[in-house]
Length: 112
Image 1: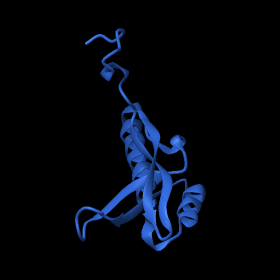
Image 2: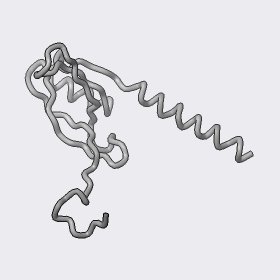
Image 3: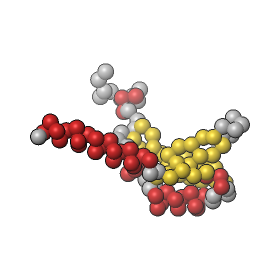
Image 4: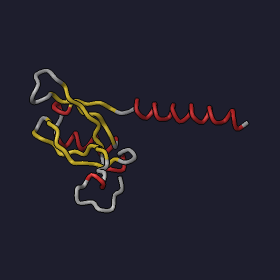
């Protein structure tokens, strides 16, 4: 019975993860006000915003932005950045890898 349950549990976990990833909304941040961008994050908890690159013509940039660090993955933290909106730069949060305390040159407690 346990041999049967493990594959079923694994398939269910993959299905649930894929469903959550597929459900995230995508928006063009330059077509809406900063207040609208922040409102979307407040209600949807996470969204993908795209906008044109400032450095390379016709290159769209995009990333996943979140309402708070609670919506970041394991070993991630929320970092405040700005993205372009219809009425200027808009402060939002996106997830980055948690800094490794052993990368600090002054750290004396890390073993490598």
